[in-house]
Length: 138
Length: 144
Image (cartoon, rainbow over all chains, first blue to last red; front, top):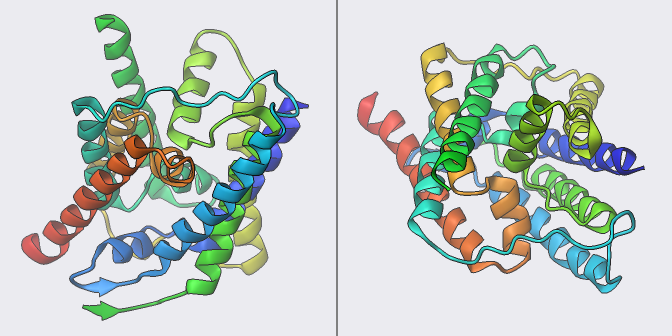
C-alpha cells in the first residue's frame, strides 16, 4: 500500500514536471537568465506548487497522522548554518551550469536524453560522497 | 531583458500537479517530497541490501509520469544544444554534493520547505537561486 501511494505521488510529480516545462533544461536556464532571454514561467511553477502544497499540507496535518503511518516525518533542523548555505550555493552552481535539478533529471532518464545519462550518475555519486563523508566525521 | 517562451498557464498547472504530489506523499505517508533525499536514501538502502519500498515506487512513478506526457504530446525531451559531457558530470557532482550537504533541492526546500514556512528552507532557496542565476550570467554573458 505504501508503494502504491509512492507510485501515485511519483506519477503526479513526473507529469507535473513535464507539463510545467521543468524537464527542459534550456527553459530552466532561460528562467535563470534575467539579464538575457528571460522566461519567467518557472516562477509560476513554484507559485502553483507552493499554493497547492501550503493548503494541502495543512489539511493533511489536521488529520493528526498520515493514512499509512503512525506519524508525520517532518524535518527538525532549523539552523541556518554554513553547511546549509554552502550546500545550497554549490547546488545552484550545478543547476545553472546544466539546467537540471534532481527531479527533472531523474524524470527524463527514459526519454532518450543522453545528457541526463551523464548527469544523474554524477549527481548520485556526489550525493553519496557527501553522505559518506558526513558518516565518517560524526 | 528580453522575455521569451512565456508559458504561465502550463507552468502553473504543472506546478499544481507537483504540489498535489507533495500533498499525497504527506497525507499518505507523512513524508516530504524531497527528490534529492529520496534518491540518495534509495541508493543507500539498495547498497545495504534493502530493495524497494515507497521511494523506489516514487522514482519509478516520476519516470513514468514524465514519459506519459512526452508520449502523449509527441514532444522531444532531447534539448537542442551541444553541452560537453564533462560539464554535465561537473554539474551533476555539484548538484549531488550540494543537495546532500544542504539537505535539499528545489522540491524539498523549494516546494515543501516554503509551504511549511521554514526560514531555513527560504535561506536555502534564496542561496541556490542566486548562485544559479549568477552561474548562468557568467556562462552566457561573460564567458561566451
